[in-house]
Length: 392
Image 1 (tube, helix red, strand yellow):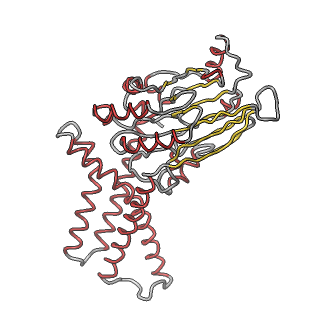
Image 2 (cartoon, rainbow, N blue to C red):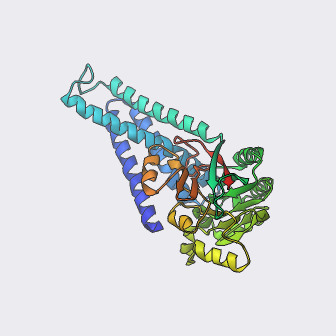
Image 3 (cartoon, helix red, strand yellow):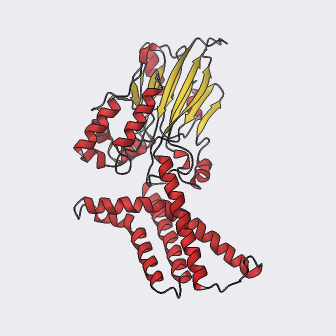
């Protein structure tokens, strides 16, 4: 699906959902007087905030569209849950016409209908508040994965402790305070190597704010591990501009791999793939075997060292398996981030979250350490994954 088609689809859904909710709100509060007018005015303000923020960008002082954008992003979560609850209430209302569910069948009183609206709004805000609180506190999750290599040894010869940090989305919604939590947690796990699996950035706010940019670069540079910190770009890093992303990462000590490889400490082959979004710039990203061929022609023993692949979007998992990779780390899916999108995301990918194994190849798809859009998480926690790779 092209970006333009995706934008039109999302915009159509946004308009449709809000139109439905506004009509139902107007009809439900009939006879409620001033409450009806105030409620509908608040709803319209919230629903229009996000598009107003985008439309006014560049035409007014930056603080005004930013404020609209912030309010609009926060509104997305109660919009989703308000829509689900409104549809559920309408289904119950229709059933009530056939089967007596409530003591008093329709038409309901003004006070009864007002109470329903208040309940839907309160539940939507409550779920959003819980999701916002959940999103603020990343956790460490730990897993083990085995790789036997070509030797076929049964006993573990050594271990590589890998920290996987994905989808930070630094920018308007995720700031340096949250990044500080991520860095602190990652360093506390004492990993051997740190892998940033794409979408470090989210929008241009960080790049255009010298203070925030400097703080973020300093924090990323403070990531500490024996074999260093490494990254690949994600689709949002391309959206902000891949060259601008590379310039920013150049201010840190995190090394970015774009269809490149390295052998940190001579302990593994680390292969970083450019994101699929490279095609937007007319670039065809290299295949894993093509990159490995360069490694072997450069004298790297690709048969004995474990191959670790970094690829932001977890599509085409067979490619890593066919290349004999020990581990592939990815992100991008956010585990759906907001219920019920976790179910939709699970249909889009072979594996949308967690540890997975195909043949001798292990995969880890992270739920991400930050958030995209609303700073809300209702499908799992923001995480730093520590993968202990047992090399046998």
